[in-house]
Length: 283
Length: 288
Image (cartoon, helix red, strand yellow):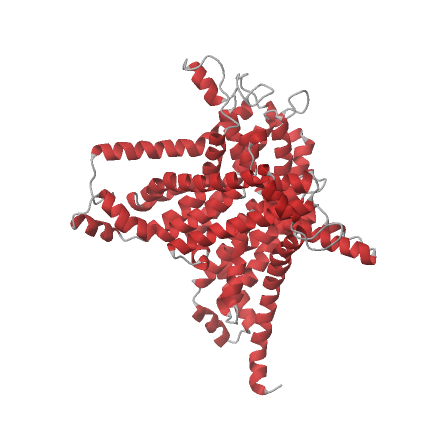
């Protein structure tokens, strides 16, 4: 099965056709989504009404293009804002976690590490509802006892950020810890010998070394936040981030404007994926 | 403060400073919310005492427990299918190609999953609906006279589940298979083994950690999936996360929803635990 062991021709024919089928299976949904964004019809399905770019650029009429659909544009803005805040919080806490787990020994460390991994196996919907319940309980308590209205603990954008932060931090921590593990500590000691304080040594030697991992974690975190649906859907208030807005439209049965926005999303995540992969390679 | 302890204390302070965000995060966003969910599910909303009625409701209402069992069984099936489909592909990437082409093919597997799940599910809807691509291709080929509705069946849900979890099986499999030295496989053949022996005695045992972590993640993703069953399965998809959503958001019955949430959490922990136990893997090693 490995190159040094020859197999029969039939084996290779079957194996290679299987692989081709697999990649067709992977690519098919993305290709049709992109293709139908150019369909000159009210529906992203057959019959094919001819080629048009109206679903991107048209500013009026019954084919309102994505770049003029203020509702969708607003939801993109919201999603981006949520993603930026979540990314900043998650990568910051992930850095502190990485240093804690790599540099310190304390009782209960392995237990805490296991707890840290837990969000990976909690379904997103569940994480969402538990934070929803907890937030509301605290808000109710403050309102009943002190007449203080903690609006941010009610469904809304802050709660969405909190919910996404809760699981994205785990992923960022794993990415950054993996690189910190490979760091040669003698470099830091050299800085200390040259008279740097521990803090200065960490910021001038270790953090620059970690930079590719931090940027990588930030990219992953941004995309995970931007594209998250399960947790977000449980925590949104009246303002809908992009995935929620798209979901509502999908259920109603939408025009190909949804395909147009999907194409933009594919391009965006494609670019970010490339950047991330080239970062990994440089390691 | 003595001299000896003052030399150590900055390090101690540093540790506490790093420990604080971690503990706050885990306590406030993971542990306490789930404990609150548990408390909610066993508290009588009117009198405030202990009640088991929300769990009793689950066991007496067939719709609820059937949905639960169905979700679990379909997730297990989806996990098995994903493993079977992903294994040959991962083996090809890890063992049969080298260098540049390996990187490109691996990237081809990864890139679709950088795109939002919503977009991918939307793609399947366009492919499978009555006026969609596959139905029209079949008509064009003369295989059917009218459009075929391929959406809203259990098979469609299964397809969507397998598709959306594929990456999480391929990546751990590729990384464990990568670490298998080719010479072991060659030695197996030299000792007279055939493809089947080698697969069972050498490759699969070596890939076990990857298989387990892939299966755990795929199972969790299927169990907790909401988009795929709702969009590809339609009104009768009967997925348990959908029940949770309905109780919380539509019916505003938070106590019942919390009980469902706890049941889902129990089920998933049980299956993850059993999977680790049977294959003798540790949670920390498998996930980290």
